[in-house]
Amino acid sequence: MTSKASERLEFRDPKQVQAFQRALEHLCADLKTPISIMHVCGSHEQSIARFGLRSLLPPNLQVIMGPGCPVCVTDMPEVDEAVYLAEQGVILATFGDMFRVPGTVKSLAEAKAEGADVRIVYSPWEALQIARKAEREVVFFATGFETTAVATAAVILSGPPPNLSVLSAHKYIPPVMEIVAEMPQTRIQGFLAAGHAATITGWKIFERFVERHGIPVVVGGFEPLDILSALVQLVELIRRGERRVVNAYPRCVTPEGNRNAQRLLWEVFQTESGVWRGIAYVPNGNLRLRPTYAWADARARFQIRLSEWLHDAPPRLTQECLCGNIMAGIATPYDCRLFGKECVPESPVGACMVSSEGTCRIWYEYGGHVKGPTP
Amino acid sequence: MCLGVPGKVLEVNDMTALVDFWGVRKQVLLHTVDSPVAPGDYVLVHVGFAIRRIPTGQIEETLAFYETLLRTAEEDLMAADVQEEMGAGEET
Ligand code: SF4
Ligand code: SF4
Image (cartoon, rainbow over all chains, first blue to last red; front, side, top):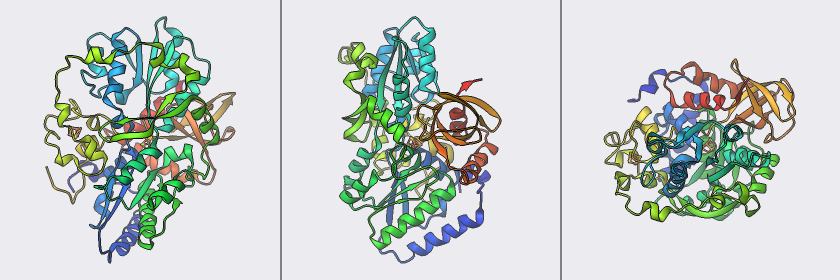
């Protein structure tokens, strides 16, 4: 193995890991065609890469990462809106992951270097605290999937000060699974669904997906044993041609999910169609504030004139970035000419190299598929 | 930005709880939790908000994973994510 992480690989229960490995080998031994499984979760990819799980899989079982990282799928115009507002003089608060994501013209980090007031927060609640102390307008550039949008909703419903507003780039996972399932190039036979998003939505939400696409879904946790056990169950379902949802992460995921969180989420947000960076136009894939909450919606409160501002934007290397294909599961970072050369974590060209959940970043840090081509 | 981290509830005050994450104590918000929590419960925390009370009896396995990560913490992306999530609660 090539990755530095593999040297300190540590499993909670190596015996069980071996048992799962043997089960997978056995299940895949007589397959006529290889199996492709997609997970939709940056944390899954981190765990898979960190613990070198791909090296334990039989060669005819492929686990690929789909559009599972909210930072990576934040569309460039959304970053542009945030940079635009920061340059208009508001205090722009956002998660650390978003800080260096390239926009069309520049990243928030670059805007800050030029004097804009950009603050990194760990929680939407911190943005609210900043607004309480500040006299100026504070805009929280809100990214993340439904899990994180719930927290943003709670802040909006908690009676925030009038100088706080939200620029929502929140995304909703279930619709993008539909898109990826339909991409002819991907040929996904099973989905490993992400535990923490399902903590909110519950696992029943995937039943309609299974009915529509005939692809089984297993909800899994992040620890190596969780992932391996979920893979065993998924391969069993695929082999038997069984189309259903299995919850392999019952300690965090229930059939109905977190009802209280869902109530907050849908009170404040509604789904809208829009682009996920690199992937596609995703019907109902964006979470936007409902008109009732226009008072807290940065898009309603400020005039964001992107087209004039972008008018003379110079072309950037970003045009060569393959993040989209990587997130759709049809390319790997090794296919990108810029990987590890022009594009490194210190000076990322694409979003997938910025975020700690981005495939390019993870492969850069840990090495990728050991059976894959080397750079 | 995307992980949830388990912690032990020490005190509950209306909509906030004092939660212990491996010795680091933080105020965590309870607006988003799925069922009422009490001292001694474990909760899964995401960006400073509790999103799930983890049933007792299932906590060991959940904790073991994070402990493995934190034990080998230096310069690890995933450990950094865990630490970031722990950083999200308000200092006490
Ligand atoms: S290596 Fe960089 S430029 Fe290439 S696909 Fe990944 S993020 Fe994009
Ligand atoms: S938001 Fe949750 S489900 Fe999505 S990548 Fe992060 S941890 Fe995984």
